[in-house]
Every structure is written in C-alpha cells, then in structure tokens.
Image (cartoon, rainbow, N blue to C red; front, side, top):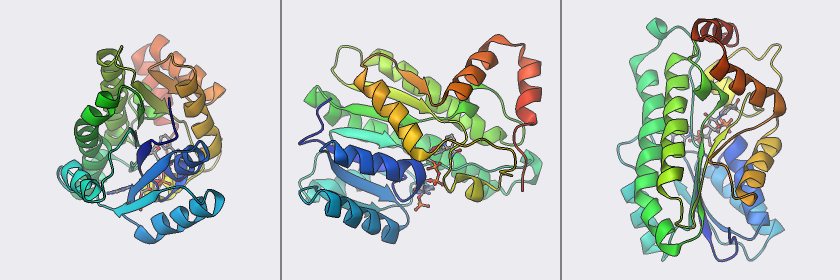
Length: 260
Ligand SMILES: NC(=O)c1ccc[n+]([C@@H]2O[C@H](COP(=O)([O-])OP(=O)(O)OC[C@H]3O[C@@H](n4cnc5c(N)ncnc54)[C@H](OP(=O)(O)O)[C@@H]3O)[C@@H](O)[C@H]2O)c1
C-alpha cells in the first residue's frame, strides 16, 4: 500500500490502539484524519505527530460515533476541506463487563452503535472512494472475543463476531480491486479499554498497543490474509476456540472475564 499522499481516517484515535495506529501510519508518510469524542486528546496527538513529521497533514474531527449514521457528516466535513479518504482504520470501540441482565439498556446499545453500526456506516461511506483509487486499505478492529461467545461480555463479543465476519466477507468481495481489507483481532491490550469496560485486570497478560499495531502493519505488508490475531498465545486461543466443543469453549471464556 502507498502511504505518501494518502489520507487515512482513524477512529478511536484519542487513546490506545487507535492513537498508536496514528503515530505509526504518520511515520510511514500518511496524512491523517483523527476521529473520537475527546477533541483535546486528538489535538494533543496531532501536535505530537507534527513535531515528529512537520509535513504531516493531520485533521481532527471530534465526533460521537454512537449517533446514527455518522459517516455522512464526517464525509461532508472532509469535503469542505478538500480531503478524500484513501484508507480507513475503524478502531473506535467499547465493551461492557458484567451480567447481561444487570446492564443499563443505553450501555448495551452504545456497544452496538459504535462497534457495529458506526463501523458499517463509515465503511459504506468511505469504501467507494478507496476502491476508486485502486489502492489503500480498510482495517477493522475486531477482537479475540470474536472467536467465541463470552458470558460476562455477551454483547461486546457478539459485536466483534460481527466485525470479524463482515470484514472477512468484504475482503473476498474486494479481491482484485487493489484494496487490502484486514480484520485485526487483539487479545488483552494495555489501553483504557479495561477501565471503560469495568473488567478486572488481575492475572491478565497484556500486549502493548505497539505490538498490536505491528501485527496489523506486518499483515498489511504481506498482502495475504484477510484476518490476523495479534500475539502467539492469542492465536492459539482463537484456533482452539474453533476446534474444541462449543460448551467447553463457552465455559472457558466465562472464566476469562470478571467485572471489577
Ligand atoms: N484493549 C483491549 O484489550 C482490546 C482487545 C481486543 C479488541 N480491542 C478493540 O480495540 C479497539 C481500540 O480499543 P483500545 O484498546 O484502544 O481502547 P481505548 O483505549 O478505550 O480506546 C477506545 C477508543 O474508542 C473511542 N470511542 C469510544 N466510544 C466512542 C464514541 N461513542 N464515539 C467516538 N469514539 C469513541 C475512544 O475515544 P473517545 O472516548 O475520545 O470518544 C477511544 O479513542 C476497540 O475496538 C476495542 O474493542 C481492545
């Protein structure tokens, strides 16, 4: 993929994996559009990127992706600035840990709105321009939880199963267009995710956002796969989930997440 003269829109750029994508893609020469709700964080990251690469064009668009169909307003804001998106990283996401019956309905819907609806809407909005260029990439951030049902994170894991299946199907539909489509599935990663989701961190083995983004960039460079799991241990767990009887997989997954 060409990075110079390509504008990459990254959602979830105010923190964790999305912020790391922004740093690393800027290092490769891309211009960026940073999207999340916390505008101060986006501007702070933009300033950091410009210090390291003064010619980087970085645009910050503070947006709540839980609102219906956010793609149209983002596209309009970019059109006003003469910016066409050449690659898209859908990284914004959130989870909620705890029994389904105890969850506030708004919190359940927010996971579906951001993780599924916004991701699908942004893909539908920007993919035609990306395909028209005959280059570029779509990276959708799924999760190790996409590979099995996860009691205690039932809605979150189901949203990520959507992301994984949707992205793998799109990768097949887009073969021959020159556009790389990749589902990235991190396991536990050191970011704000555990705090936001209210998940107990004790005994958890974390990757860093840098390790996760390196996995994605290696996969993009290798031109092959539609889907990659980050981390050797996580790869084994994803493979095992596909091989073992489902009731064992569900039981093991139930023990892996606990609310704080
Ligand atoms: N960390 C893990 O263990 C882990 C494991 C597997 C998969 N993942 C996935 O990796 C992705 C990145 O997560 P992370 O680990 O980097 O977590 P994080 O540090 O909590 O970052 C989440 C990002 O999503 C953005 N976001 C959340 N709700 C939003 C909304 N309504 N509108 C716009 N942006 C919103 C946040 O920005 P604002 O709050 O500023 O809006 C933030 O930039 C997510 O899709 C997550 O599901 C994470």
